[in-house]
Image (cartoon, rainbow, N blue to C red; front, top):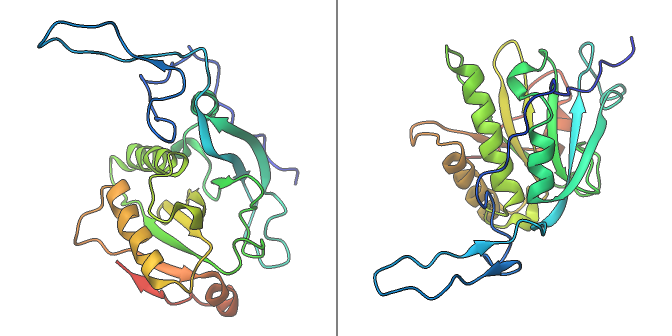
Length: 238
């Protein structure tokens, strides 16, 4: 069966990005000018030059996967496709505003956002020594809104280099499933417990998870050893 079309959103009015949605590394320097001198007590506002793109620390690629059935090691990744690569705040919003949100994907589909040059596969040279932090989106009347909001917040944290040890981040995945949607962050350093714990704690902050909610980290090598017959045990939890 041929793969389904890419999840493009229907035409709609352009939605401009919010004022300075993500500051480039180092704050508002390139393209920003100091406002005119003001009287004491008045607010001195910096004006941002939106004619110049605000480049990100890394280039990022959005991937889409919509398998038609249960996969195994032989078939996994055959339906995985690269959608678009961007490298600026403005290009991110252009992409985000023109694809459907995760809540409108069919069950079994995934969005992946990974640094350019890294494929969202266990076998990728950058990923193979790492693992994944996962959390489930609670079912309920607001589940669709929740998964969309969680995904957007995670994307902004990724491309804004908001995570501690951000160089060890590979990317993120949102998975739409019948039993409950999932959001995950992939890293490349499963052996470094201190780094993983810091990333896991920050992920809980980004997704606004309560102190009582626990999330777990699974190493890719453990998952591959477990195959698809059983679930690998979490190496770390926060």
